[in-house]
Amino acid sequence: MRDGICEPATSALLLAWYDRHARVMPWRTGPAERAEGQRPDPYRVWLSEVMLQQTTVAAVRAYFRRFTERWPTVADLAAAADADVMAEWAGLGYYARARNLLKCARAVVADHGGQFPGTEAGLRALPGIGPYTAAAVAAIAFDEPAVVVDGNVERVVSRLFAVEAPLPASKPALVALAAGLTPQQRPGDFAQAMMDLGATICTPRKPACSLCPLCAPCAARAAGIAADLPRKSPKPAKPTRRGIAYVALRADGAVLLETRPARGLLGGMLGFPGSDWSPDPAPAPPLDARWTPAPSAVRHTFTHFHLELTVHLAAVPQDAAPPAAASPRARPSAPATCRR
DNA sequence: CATCCGTGGTA
DNA sequence: TTACCAAGGAT
Image 1 (spheres, rainbow, N blue to C red):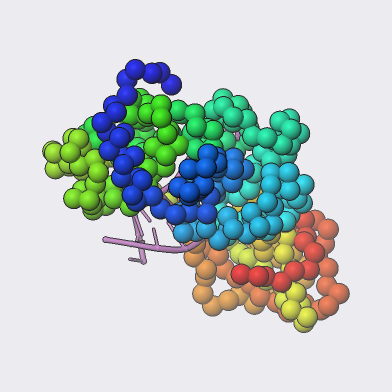
Image 2: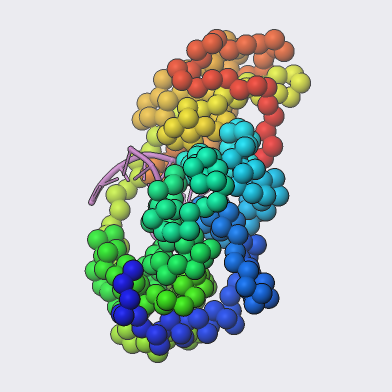
């Protein structure tokens, strides 16, 4: 962060708006607490920022509450069993975040005496903390004037300065422009204000420019192209993969699940045994039984491909056991019933 | 640089 | 129904 090139007028406009319109969220400290000089808890800020990576506030709220109730401190989380954390994260997506969450908590306890590093560089060195999260935690929890750039900030800045070059190539230019806006005072509030603005007013489609505190200085608004920015380079189309999932039902209600390999797609999560996912999957039943295919397939779309799963069902006896190597790397789970 | 990695909401 | 989008990081 360099000093001397900020734009006080714009950041002041935004902070004044934030003081009136900041959204209330469980990981934020209220104005009253801050008036008494309290800083946000770095553990809660970090946890919320990791959960919020590519994930909406609405989806995160319940998960954040459950995590902080079950593991109130980073030391509590560091002492948790892997399977408990993965199970608590189930449904939130991007499961590498949960694996790195545990690694990070354990590194904070083992290498930093249970206290999060207070600098951007120190945070950046921890697992699962990249440029965005390091800057966000440094600014919000430690009052460091770090340059916080997420998807919201990219959008706000590209419009404010009418940057027409497409993402992702324009990212460095947008970061430089954001650096010029970032104030030395209240950098954490500024960062959250930019993100609140992007989430509620400077939205991807139909931005509410008439309500925007930065309407006056906004170049895209003046040029009538706010809704067209930021431009983005076209993305390749998603291919379709197919597969077979085997659901073995026991009379007592238990279902056969396996723990997936620790890395890769859905790594470390529980799942049904199944075939590979490819254009032409080979059948791979986990045990001998009278498998009956379900009439219609289950469709799901991941980040980069469509999946069409055919479900095969079978009732199995109480003492049924899959061969030790039913699946090359996955391992059978203890008998389980699904919660969701 | 590009690619891989979920899920739910929305137009 | 489809495509895009959301407080990204690791490799």
